[in-house]
Structures are given as C-alpha cells and as structure tokens.
Length: 446
Image (tube, rainbow, N blue to C red; front, side):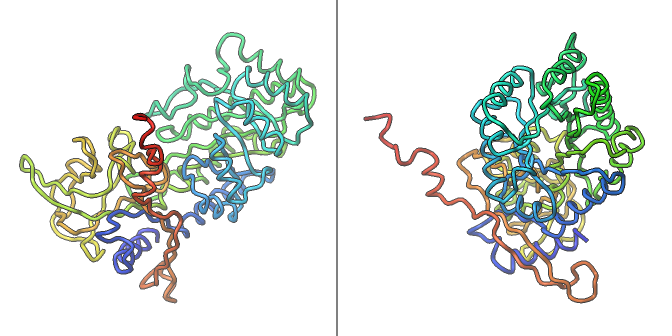
C-alpha cells in the first residue's frame, strides 16, 4: 500500500541522512505509485474503446524531466503550455508525435517551432487561427491542428480552476453570439483542421460537469462533420481535470469511474470514429508526492501549541493563501521517522516565511509535535514542491524518487529496503545569489 511505502520512506530518509538539520526539508516521489496511476489511466480508457488514445501528461502539474521520462516509459505523452515545458518534454525524450501544445498566449515563434516539429496544436482563439493560416500556407507541416472551445457549462467549487464558465479566458466561447457558427465556418474553410479540444476544469469540478463539457464538444464535432460532409474532425482532445481526494489515502474518483461515465453519457465518443487525447496532470502525481520537514521549534501562543517547520508557502503556496480550497493533511512522526502516537492535541503547523499566514495547518488535531520531530505532508506530488515560490529567498528543496524492495512476503513493503534516487538537487545559496543578479551587483550604482 502507498501509506506503508510512505512510512518506510520517512524512516529511511532520516536513517540515510536525506532529512537532517543541514537539509531540513525534502520532497519524495513514490515511483511505484506513479507507475500504478499511469497504468490505471491507460487501462480505464482501453476498457471502453478500441480507438487510439494519447494520454498527454499536463507538464505544468510536475515540470520535472525525470518524471516526464518515467511517464513516457509508461506510455504517456506530454501536454505543454510554454516553451519551457516543451523544452522539458523534449529533454525527457517525449517525441513530437506524443506532444500537444496548449496555451492561450502562443507567440508566432512558438507556433512556428511546433509546426516545424510536427507537434499537435490547439488554437485557443480565432486570432491565433489567423496566425496558423499564414504558417500553414508558408510551409508544410505534419502537426495535427484544432481549435479549443469553451462549452460554457458552468463552474466547479474553485472558480480559478473552472475553465468552462461563461467568461473563461480559454477557448472560443460557444454560447456567445455568433461563436458557434464562426467555429463551424472555420472548419469549412480549413480542411487541415482535424481536431477539437475542450477542458472543463480540474480540482473542484464534479465528474458530471466534466462529462457535460465533453458531450458539448462531441456534439459540435458531429455538427461540423455533417456540415462538411465528411469526417474532417478525426480526434477529440477531452482535456484532463480528474479531481484529487486530499482528505485521505484513498484515490477517488478513479479514471475507471470517469471513463465509464463518459461511455454512458457520450457513447459516440467511443464507437471508434474518433481518436482521443487526454491531458491529466494532478491526478497522476498528487497522491505520490510527500514533503518532509523537521520541526525546528515548538511554542505556545494564546494557549495554542505551534510547531514551526521549514515547509510552508514556498512549497504549498495554494494551501497557505487559500486553505479552504486547498487543505492538506499533516502527518506526525518522531525524530527517528516513526509515526508519533499519543493523544491528539489541537495545534498549528507553521512554515518558515516571515508573514503570519504561513501555515500548513491551523487548529489541526495531531499527536503533540516536539522539537526535532518530522512532519510529512502527503498528496503534494503535483503543483507543490516542483513549483517553488521564492518567498524570503528560501531554497528549492531536493526532490528524490524512492522505491521499496519487497521482503518476499508480498505485503506491499513490509520491512523492504528503501532506495532513493535524485530527481532534483537542493538549491544552493550560490544559486540563489546568481539568480538574484549576483553577477550584476553594481548595475544600479555605476
């Protein structure tokens, strides 16, 4: 089980000196868990369709080259939204045929590079389509090209992550006056447009709303193909967005549940006429990452115990600034990395940044933390430790993948040996100075 592997990894990180007074915060990735999620995704869609499916991992969820390579080896491609993300995918060995470029602000240079490489591109708007017209006319391309549409089906519980609202910044808004007609006309005039893309949102978006958005895109594809008189659209990119359960180790909802829901509500999607692209990110990585940090001090304020750690806003930025939308669990271990036991005590778990709101947890019931203890923050494998927020010039933590060698009893870890591999080295103080203009110290006083 993932929880038993995590417990073994916490203990091993202390025993092997990965977490220490010199390195008081580290991040861990469970490679077996990542592989299992990739397999669950591919098998879920294979169970409902024989059509080709490209599962393109949303690089923004975990922009780490070793992660992208691991997922590529597991059969996944990459969905990129910037030149930087494309560079990461290429460094990981993801081929252009397994890469999709999405962004609401692609420059001519980005589009030109994508078309030269043969990378799939989803135009976000009709002005971008005008740019593609000129590029396609100037040089042949093997890139599959399409348009992203906003079905405007509504929002989930987190507005910032709901991309199919009436006023979302993404895609062509289908319910705006004249928009649907303009999209259909765009395909009529451009036989090289062969894809249609939509994405309803991610965390906080219920599966039924996601399926509704896909259904709207499917209906539009059918309308376009009827109007054109042939199957011009041969692939539907249905985005990603499977929500993650941040309240326990249970992985819910599942890819199988979502695939079955789509098969029930949009059956034509899986009848073999359309290839598919998915763009899942958070749901593939979140449950398989854990931040570990030492408790540097403990104190009491206003009668409430506070454990001050080295993990806060620089890693769990969304949690600190929007704790109601992004709650994270906190697990207590002793200084040797064993699960701490004892009566639960309501306490705060604070980060190191110099502002009062830098809290991982407020009023959380945990065994009372002590100086030198270890705090583990699970479910942080996506959008957390790979997206460093340099408040107070706090350094980026080291990131390590881990595997657990079975002890032969098949019990999912048992007393297995934990092996760590470096995914990203911890940032040095010299690197912080260099990134902060250290080579140009006299630039403003010369």
